[in-house]
Length: 209
Image (cartoon, rainbow, N blue to C red; front, side):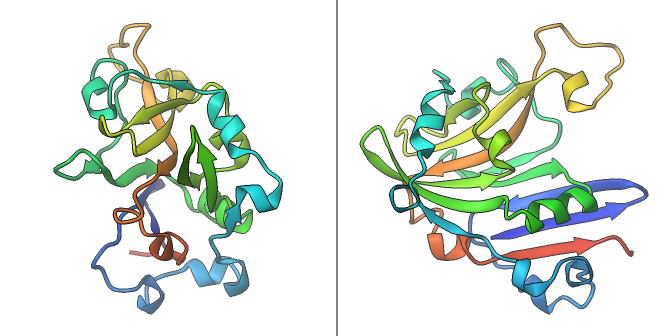
């Protein structure tokens, strides 16, 4: 899974490529600085079989609210986004743009926060792609948004006020206004989100331009 973090003029931006991409391998990029911050043996995306590991990701998912509308249909109504996210023609998430500074990026890699958990939820096998620390991914305040009515892919989202998100808007939005922070992907579509791709770490850090 390709995850980038670019910092320029003090602003850190990240992008998570959830679907396979056609870019060159970041490991071959001479400008990639991640090797200066993280040892090669730490740059992994673990795979966890929920049953074999004795964990219960499904129970964590059950504590979250499942939104009635799809992610796309609730955009601009139940939530907004601070940055852009890319969807394919059928409404499935291609990639996520997010605020990501180098120190947090390194911490997430070091703590193996990016991981894939194989679990069974509502009688169906899913891969849960964690995009943060466990306490964030399984926060019971999170919301599960289905990508389409097929309910075969969901995103795990935390809806927050701009202040919680660390953003100040002028003029101030309505009190009900919420921004979405994407914390995970729940997929039963191995054709769209192949495990072989998700488990292949491709971390790219650039701060020198």
